[in-house]
Amino acid sequence: MNEEFDECLQLCRDCATQCHQCVAACLQEDDVKMMARCIALDIDCAEACTFAAAAMARSSEHAQFICALCAEICQACGEECQQHKMDHCQDCAAICLACADECRSMAGTA
Image 1: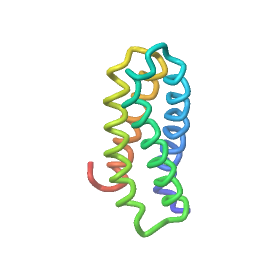
Image 2 (image 1 turned 180 degrees about the vertical axis):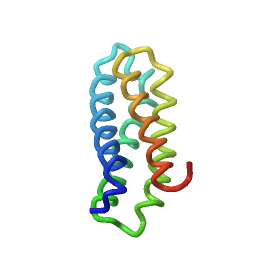
Image 3 (image 1 turned 135 degrees about the horizontal axis):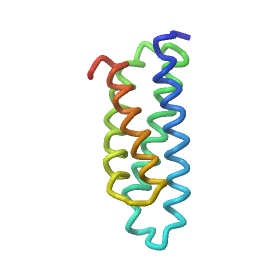
Image 4 (image 1 turned 90 degrees about the vertical axis):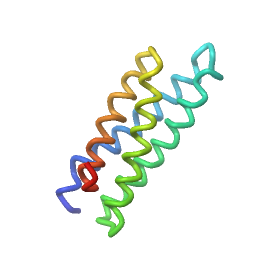
């Protein structure tokens, strides 16, 4: 595996995990309907991060393109999660925005 991907790959894995945890917590909120966009973006972000991590793990020739896409999705998810005061959303926002930055850097689009 290409060592230049290590930090981004691990952050993508951690972000996917946090997004899954945020989905689970959002589904326990009293007003789940209010959380619908957050849940949808969490799912998209987790999938994008998993895809990006897998591409980096196998040194895919498309890893940079996939990471650029992942950065956009992580950014959108982070911005949505920031709007909610719950700790799980704030934790998710922090890692999503960090992952967006790292993916942009890896993709050369920073």
